[in-house]
Image (tube, rainbow over all chains, first blue to last red):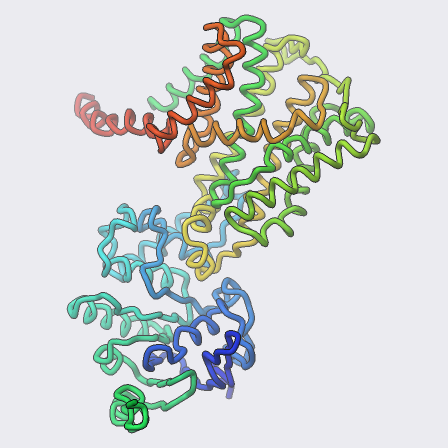
Length: 255
Length: 325
């Protein structure tokens, strides 16, 4: 059986630095999969390789058996793998609704000739409906006409996910979605992520907030110094000796 | 409704305008109309965040192409103009391959270099470009009649009406593009190209699309110019003209569709009419430069910001009118 999203022997080398070293793991369909590890473990680099920002030095990313490593970001996105960004990366000058409308670029591909003549009414209505649906899902409907740059941090993070959600993705890659959120916002966001999973969207997230990770993820992959360290359910990972050593530092690391 | 009235009044004003002007002012008016199309097309390119220094040369490509099509191949002038615009757009697609490996400042310099290369090619190849002297005796627009009005293209008024109609139509297309999902994608490419790409936007394709559309309309404006003045040479499209386009865009502001057009109109009136009337013949470039510096210092958001401040009051007044109705 072909696996849904398989990372096979992924390696990334920046000059002399081996950022990710022969990493392999599999993401099951319809799961929330966490990728954790101490700072500098290569989590974000892995993310950037899956989403097409970096071309891996070697190794493969297989989506339903198709090799998507080395494709451009928009080509990866068109195969259903959409990412969000670590910081509040948004179209700050555009309104919230316009941000979500950019997210509908893939399901409602703009056509310039139709747009000039005015034959794209259905598409525009459809795109706006989809954008509003995405905003409603993340509780941003009432802010639709605000400038995205004026939103609070929590709302900006939610909007970032709404933009990704608007494009009908199969997989959303979330890069530290809980950074800078208060516990209440984190709790709400976790609820939304579970709702996304129940809608059949697979989530792969990189996160530092252990409480959120342990409470949310179905499977967790832990990396350290670019290498695969351990994989399992939250309970397994919490008590895994190698993981504890990587985070707290074993005796041999204490200099 | 009041918007239609506003446009109708504007149209009547534009039709009546040349009759209130002297012959030389009518000629300036024709150039102004052509430049409005040039600067409006430039804005479409700036939507994606790229500023080019080769836009005027691209306009020249349209002018040369249209002149040569009508002169050497005997193509009917209006069709030659359209072909001139298409030639510019096609050349832009070709140029996009080397130029869009660069972004921002590098693109600016790259586009300048590309423009200079094109200008050198015009100078170097006497046949068909006529070398440094350029092309003379370009076919004028053939006269025709639409029943109510006889177009006699020896008169600037006739050329103003013809080019004005073409330019208004082009502006309508540009406006439609900007307000469409395609225009939104251009904005997206400008503000956060990474997020746009992650949403499935093909950055290269959209940058090229904006560049070639802008170039096509610039080429058409060049063709309108060529068949009006009747003679073009490489120096008609040098970087000095480009500086004027930049000035119009910067002084007018590029945040809105009308900003660059406003800049073009206001500065042209100021430069050609007010300063000439005041008798500052030699000092005009000096005063023009001073105005630009002052406007950047005291009006960093451009002339459009003044218009926005004036029109922002109307939404407050509008509901009151509705109550009155």
